[in-house]
Structure formats: C-alpha cells, structure tokens
Image 1 (cartoon, rainbow over the protein chains, first blue to last red):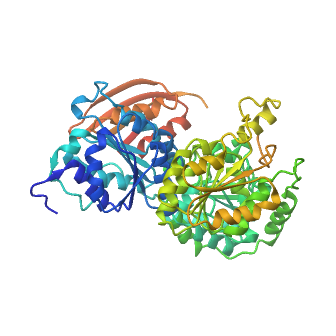
Image 2 (cartoon, each protein chain N blue to C red):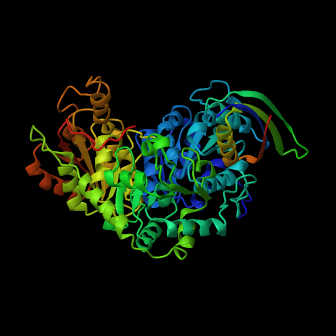
Length: 554
Length: 81
C-alpha cells in the first residue's frame, strides 16, 4: 500500500495492529497516548477500557490463554507502564504471547525526568521477552510486525513497544512489511531424525514410562497428540499447573493429574518410580521437582521444549530435543509400538486408590472446598472456561475440577500473581464475545487486588460467574505458617467476617450476587451463578481451617 | 563444581539498549562481569562484546543459551580462560 500524503504515527500504529490481526485492544488512556486514542474509535478492532493498567494486561493475557492468539494492550507512559509490570511478569513466566504498546514522553524530553516519564525499556527488560523504543514514526509498522512475530515464535512471551509522543504525531509513509526480517532471531528446531528414533526406542524399551505435559504442550496445540500417544503406548500422563488440559484428558486409566508440591499422590509416585520420564513443554520448576537430586531418580529423562535454554536448566536430562512439541509427537507416534503395560497401569491404579484423601467433614459444619468444587463441576461438566486467582482456591480448582480441554484452565503459574483471576476471566469472556460461560474462581484476598475490573464485566454484560471462595484469610500463607511457623498466623487472618461485604461490592457495580454459608444451599446458589445471563458474584463462606492437601516438601 | 573464568564473544546488532540487555541478563543472575569490552566490527551494523565472567561451567552454559535467545544477539562464542 502506498501512503502518498502519509498519515500520523498514531494512525500507522492503529493500521499496523489491524494488519497484525488484532481483534480486541485492552487499555487505559493518558496524556502520552492521546494521539493514538484519538484514532481508536475508527479502528477495526474493539476497544475495552479497563480500570487499572494491571487489569488491562491481565485481560490481554486471559484473552491469549483462552484463544492462543496474542493479546494486545495499550497504556500511557510513566505510572501507566509501571502498573503493568506484575501482569507482564505473569505472562512472561508462563510464556503467553502478548503485545503491550506504551506511550512515552517526546524523544527530546527522554532523560529529563519529564512528567510521567519512566525508563520503560529498562523497567520491562526483566519481565518481557523483548522490548522496543521507537525512534521515529517511520519505524512503527515494521516494529509492530516484528513484535507480533517475536511474541508468537519460539517460546511465546510479552513484547513491549514504547512509542514517544512525537513519533505518534509525525507523518510517515512507511507501510506494514509484507515479510518480517529479523536478522538475529530465528527460533528453530534442532531435532534430528536420530533424536526421534532414540525417543521412540526409549519409549518402546521402557517398562514404566510417564508423560509429563506442561504449558508448552498447550502453546503447541498438542493436547490431542499427547492423549493419542498415551493411549497407543499405554503411558500415564501427569501435568503441571499451567499444563492442565494439556493431557487432552488422556482417559481415566492414563490420567495422573497434577504433579508436584500439591500434586496427586499417583502422579508423584509414578514419577518417582518411572524408568522413563518424557517431559513435554515444561521447565522443571521447583514447585514440581522439590529437591532436584531426589527427583525421578530411577528414570531416564527426555525433555522436549522449543526453548533451548530450558533444557537441562533445572534437571539434567538424558535426551534433550529442541523442537515444537506437536511436531515431535506426530513424528514419534508412528515409530512407537502399541503396548498394554498392564502391570504398570495396575500399579498406578492402586496408588490412585490408596492416595485418595479421606475428607474429614469440618468441625464447624462449614462448606468444604471439595463440596464447592464438586457443585461447580456438576454444573459446568468441564465445559466452562475457568480462570483462577492465586492461592488455596487455585490449587483446589486445579485438583478437584474436571479438566477436559486445553485453554479452559487459566491460571498464573510461574509468577503466582494475585489479582490475575478477575481480569483474566474478563479477557477470556471477551475473546468469545460473551458466547462462552466463564467461571472466575477467586480467593477473598486476590479478589480485592483487582476488584475494580468488575466494572468491565458489568459494562460488557459478560457471562462470568465470579466465585469468591471466602475463608476470611490469606489461606495459603496461613497454612504455611501453621506448618512451618508453629501456627503463628501473622497478618494472614482478616478481622471482619464480611469485610468487605462482597455482595455490596457487587451491587456497587450493578452485578447480581448471592452469599452461601451452608452446604445444603450450595447447589442452588451455584446454579443461579452459572445460569445468569450477565455477570454474577457468588460468595461462598468456606471452612477457614481447610488446607490444601497433599503438600509435599523436601 | 568449581568456578572458572570464561570469555564470551557476543556478536550483536548495533542498536541502543542491546548492551544494557546483555549486561542485565548476566548481572540479574548475580554474576559479576570481570571485563567488558565493546567495539565495532567491519560490518557497522554489528558490534562485538567481549565479556569475561566467573562461574561454573553449568551456569556459564546457561548464560550462553539465554544470550542466544535474545532477539538482537547474532552469535555467541565462548572459551575458558
């Protein structure tokens, strides 16, 4: 396209975002993005106004996790940008593709401590995959194209584009590139046919193999391939927290569930006893491995990941394959022999039985987390998108809900960013145009960190059930204090029972709500929350003494 | 594992911010750069950074892999001093 008379950098940005496939832009205005906002009403994408920049970026993140397409957000300079740091970090740690456009003071004022100036590239360096400081309007189309490429190739991640105000105002004729040329960035597979044969041979020779799927499996769209291999060769599958759904819901006999610190006994025992561990798109994070020297000691470890720096980083491996997880699985599938492994699967079945935790009913007769999760599960049947916040409720949701599909469990795993749940649920609901039921499972702590975003759910009339799992405490840390600090519950128990009154908070945003305190009222309340046409807040008063079990620590 | 000095020769795109990114990647992990030398190459769009860093082989290998992941890094060559 030729731009004879040219157009402003702001207009070039909007056009470039359109060209890159942006459907929704989440954001918050400000002085140093005023030129861009002036062009937004005539853009082809939808704009969603958040209420805090952290919320805007978590929304873009939720959109990306639910769809697999990059989320896009825009904020102003200075405080607008610094408010996004936590949310960028959450996306970065979990490898979520995202583009953040930030305004910047004019180039001539950079470094002068101008009003709302911040060193954006400096601040975001540690929480983004890459960042750009645009130097002229002419650079904008190419920079946008490169940013989308970087965000979505190799291990996905957030990319920041910082645009000084004068570059938004300047006239440019430069066009969106037809092809993207990055001189130094060419993420590629180094896997060879020999690697594939070796992997197939290891699987064929193994007696006690375990597949272990992480977020990279979901990013690669390989959940079904994991399930197919699992069925063909009778290999049980464990997942990480961010890999939930990445096992393609293998099938009953092969599903181990969550591995690691709060994982199922069957998953952890299977990994401890395995003679072959096939790790797919994982990082071997410390929440998974515990003490590395004790981890999967009897197993040969194969690690498949698109990020070469991830392989061998935390756990030494016998075979590292730098490649797309889906490519590896489809190649290896035909070379792997069908097998029954009845003895191994029988052992796992027995661990699953013996590992079942006997639920003790709470002394107070209060609602147990399991009763709540089962009530939700009966209504959704695993079909709703679930977004969680961070804490006990997050692990309960991971352990106790049934997970049938990938991209249906959105959670901040690596960063563990409280405040993620409400905006991520909103981003996911917007991605599906309000056509898909979303359940936000929140703690009473994290819900207060981004509660202001409820306004967006109300404004957009999104079908989200906000379930506040209220234990009047910061339960995960309270539990840690009980175990490791002799029950010294310092700063983890809120004083008032209804502080805040979540029903009044919902009503301040025009959101319908209910509160349940007794198990016999639970089913009806969950039913109301999950059949509401718009947003609904359900506050569930659960047993404040309930713990996350099991908890493995070494 | 014992710590030794490694010399990393990084060929990078000659752009603002690249030096800060590379130094940040190393120092952000708590490793001290002993010598840092940055200069042009015959190709004006490429700079060479010579970085001496003390660390175990495992850690230095990890640093090299992460340097290669950087969008502006063209190549990293290393040797033990």
